[in-house]
Amino acid sequence: MKTFAQSLTADVLAQLPKKVQALLDMTGQFVSITYGRECKMRKGMPQVLKFSKMTLRCGIEYDNIAAVEAKRESGELPAENAGLSWGRYVPNLYPYIIEHKGSLYFRFFTVPNSAKTSPMFVLNGKEITKEEAERMCLASEFQERETTLETMTLKVEGILEINGKEVV
Image (cartoon, rainbow, N blue to C red; front, side, top):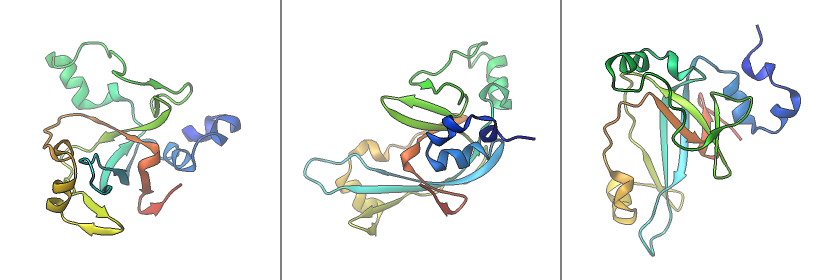
């Protein structure tokens, strides 16, 4: 049986970053993702980087998730999928790749009851504490968010490792 990536034309695949090609071959699987990005900084502060490691599900259909079906039945969600609230799916890459303002995003799905990991903060190549980062970053970087979302959309350029292997 062909994987999703194998079913795409060579032209389409050649235009995608290798990390996206790897993720397209992992549809329906649990994956360990290491993600990094620049924090939003207070004026005049040096740049702090934030790294997170998480376990997510890759390449499944949102409307087929049991929690989504239950929310539709209870009225928490509309009976019909209303589509994305931002961005658009890249043609031939639904439900995986979203384009928004010139950037590509990969849509993952959260793992119910998975352990939350603490992010790691780095300044000038050295790990710093959360408290040190809080003094330099905007408060919005540290807001506790209670979420029941089934999806997590990550900017492709920030995906650094897949299943412990560095990716480009």
